[in-house]
Image 1 (spheres, rainbow, N blue to C red):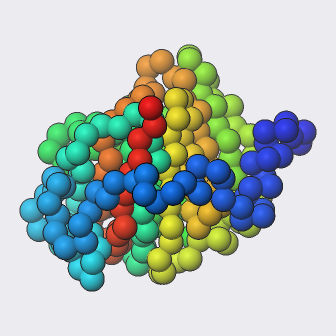
Image 2 (image 1 turned 180 degrees about the vertical axis):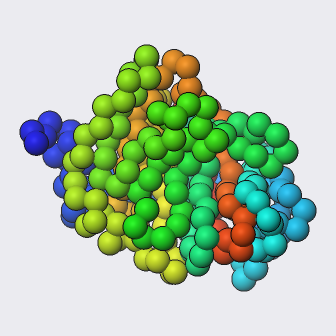
Length: 229
């Protein structure tokens, strides 16, 4: 596979574990979205979420999927940082998304689950089958205006997934600029999507966290955001 200069840089970032420049931004530029004590500022299904040990946590009591939604706005271009710990079940971090009914969110999601599926970008509650899986570990995906998808595998998926610490705390950064959204876990770029699909792409939207139900156990803390002009 021939790599462009951009792809070579992307691969080097992955294999070297280097932080991309935007992830090195001063923490003073970020605004906290979670006070570590309460769910103030978040909309959620009663009984499904709680604050435990300073983190937003699933209670494990929900029988079906639902989302806890930040009520502070619908950012377009931004960097979102947080720490997460997955224990069991299925979860995710949602950006540029929209509420379809109470506590149900459609849009871009970074998968939070067991190691073998990490790196997945997908379109939650996908409006079309081709939108379900957007990118996997080590991939750069481009959606053209007509929805045609081009995938470039720029690094070995298993080597990237090995950076993720299953059952422990991990750092996540999601960077959205224009049509491009990137997920970075523990300082390593996991996958990237450039979405110019005229029918299904979103340029702004909600930030939310998913509980897939059926005993899901996941925790989120140190959630903070900076927006770009």
